[in-house]
Structure formats: C-alpha cells, structure tokens
View (spheres, rainbow, N blue to C red):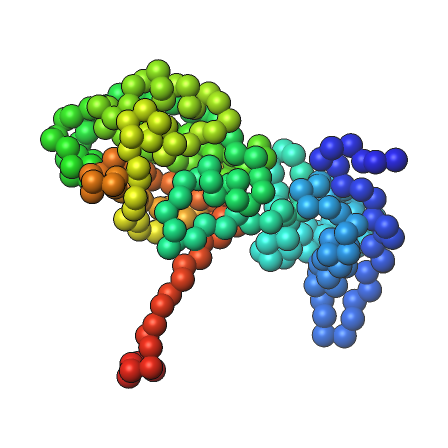
Length: 268
C-alpha cells in the first residue's frame, strides 16, 4: 500500500536499535542510523518522517537523544523542519550560477521544481534617492514595487522585492503575469516593451531571518539567509529592474566560475 502524499513510507527494514559504540555518542549513532535509512531509500526526498515518539521507540532511544540527532541531520542538510508540520527529508538544492544572469523562475525550473508565488503585492511608489540612483531616474519618479514569496513545489525558497520604472510596463500586465504560472518579469518586459535584460550587477550579503522574513519563508528565528541586491540592464545599457532577494540558504546554493590566475602569477 502506497503512503499518502507527504507521508514517509515505513522503513524497510526499520532502523536498527541504536547501540552506543566506542568513542561514538548515542546521539551520533542515532543520527547515523537515520542517515543510513534516508540514503538507503527508506524515506524518499520530500517525505515527512514519522513522529518523534515513533522514531524514538523504533530506535530505542530517549526523545531528547532523538531531537539532538535530528538537529545534527538538519545541520548536515539532510532534513528540515516546518513549524507545525513535522520533519521532512531534504530535497535537492536549487542551483544559481552567479556568472549567469537569469531569473528566479528559470532557476527553480532548472532544478526540476514547479515555480510559483504567494503573498504577491504591487504598489506604485515614489523612488527615494537611493532607488532613483540605482535605476537612473529622477528622485520621486514612480516605480512599481513588487513583493513576492517565490515557491518551489509549494515550498517558500525566496522572498523577492522588485522595482521597475512605471513607464516600462502597465499595471494590468503586471497583474496578469503574477496571476499565472510563469511569474517571470524578464519575459514580461520583453513581451510588452521589447526590453532584453542583457546583464546584471549584483552583490551577495549573508543575513539572518527577521521576524517578518521568518513568517514569509517559514523558517526559524535566526535562520541564515543570503541577500542578493541586483540592478539589471537592458540591451541599451539602461537600468530596468532593481531587485532585493532573500534566499533560504539551505535550499539555494550559489556557484561561480573563477578564471585564472594563470601561469604568470606570483600569488601563492
């Protein structure tokens, strides 16, 4: 009988009763038993583990020992906990190559997940001095301020804030793209304004989840996030989008290709 969606299948076989080994704590032994079960396919990626009481009984360990073992597995990126929902086996991370400029929608699709969004809002605001400078506007010119929680298979992975000059796109076009499954502002700009985003200038800053971000991204207080601030330029060198993105660090992995230094370098 197949397990219900979101439920973990029973261990086959169930994890062995944990025995403390020389120089290995009971907590570490417990974590190893669960790790072996996950890697052996007893729990599929994305599935929910049994309750703490059930796992503790299967492994013949106390619940405090089990909780510490689960904490170790969470630090290793093998599981993650959702408040009020349980503990889930971690799925594959989303890869974002920093040397290539592509949007969140494409990033999620490339990782094999279904993109989506929730808690979307669009408001017209006057650009302050900093925003006007980044977008090459006069102070107090109007921009569309767009906030969204980006989803990968319904799981929050990024909170994005995008600012676009109002003259580039109409409100009804924004409403349409945010209501369908694509969610790509790059595609929208090309379709309605002929804008081709040709490059971006970005900075990546580590930060921790604030109470607001914790609620939006369904993470615990103090969870590490990666904040990326980026200005996108079109084929004519004009700034067309300024974005601030908060990525859940244990779901999104950033990579970059570094060339050189070459044979002539004296660096060591």
